[in-house]
Image (cartoon, rainbow, N blue to C red; front, side, top):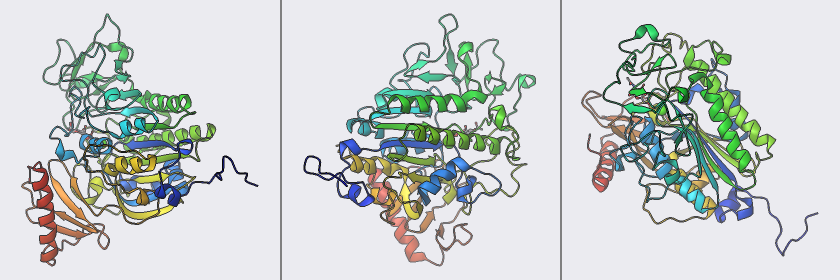
Length: 496
Ligand code: NG6
Ligand code: CA
């Protein structure tokens, strides 16, 4: 029997109740956003992979809502992550392009961000793993406090890598401090020239255990050549094979320490981005070489993290969003047999496209929402986008912000209460832009790409086999005009 407490019945949450009014403070769900790096739509068994088995990610799909049309805004990391955190289209900031590891912070610290909004709602906020949004103001001294950075963007706690696995500085940064740096061996970073007597991938191939296919000619760290040059800070250098466990441990610690209050965690998995160096426990486990092995390692991380939520009794009221920053890629600059060992595996699933492309799989990524207390398990074909998490989670937590953003409240779609997500989205390939409206994808001509307009009906033709631009001139014109209008309104898309 339920008893009346203070005149109100304790009511269980439901998607409808959450949509009608913000969740009461004492029922606020924890929110965890897990963003894999370069994981493709077809890389998970719950998305149809048969040559890879991903029970951790599949668990999320089984207990949550799996989206078949979930997008990031861009087919590369920095612009994609920029949108997720700021609710802004990446092309509204000309600096939101793949950044070197010594780039300055590209997020305006005066503006609203997802973690700031969650903080306003009373959440403890943390970020662990891949960052890739720049740090500092252009002249970072890596041996002192590194700021502005995660804290100024809204995170109470941070344990991050500055850019990518394949870019210097190859150290962890915790709350703005380089981890393990010693006073007598300061770290220096440069992207233009090497330091005296430092071996590089280009000059010292005999020192490498993984060889580049393109680029990656800079400093050698842990036997792997990177992009850019660093010297000093030897004790602080990361070991790629420990990275998964270290990030997982920090992610778990963050939720342990904040289990008594609502928390917001952005957990940026570093896999399966290059260099693909798993812990030895995963070597050879996929039969697909390092790329498959690190996907299994990433899956293990997800599984372990979910078990920690179980152990803390937090599973029911934690909203977990699992996704990827861009589509898949095989050879991304190292000779790691990704191409040779792919077999029948289809990293993009039924879609066409890769990382950096405007084709659907460039930005249509794994997208799973689990919130056992509220979201009914299933599959949704609603058209949703990471950029809309800002406005949607603001609605969920009853928050407002004054800044104008491109983020739309599609909470009903995220919670599975509606099939209606967004209507349209401009997607970025790499310096290229395409337009999505409803089930249509329009790709304008670009030099070095296709020379004619492309138009696809993604519902009927997910593999983009039939370009119907010539058959649908009126529709093409409409889409063109709308795309042009968005460009005019922002005056920032310059490469078309
Ligand atoms: C490219 C790198 C690639 C990867 C990518 C960024 C070369 C030849 N290629 O420039 O290896 O690091 O940048 O990936 O250097 S992302 O997922 O962070 O956007
Ligand atoms: Ca990426």
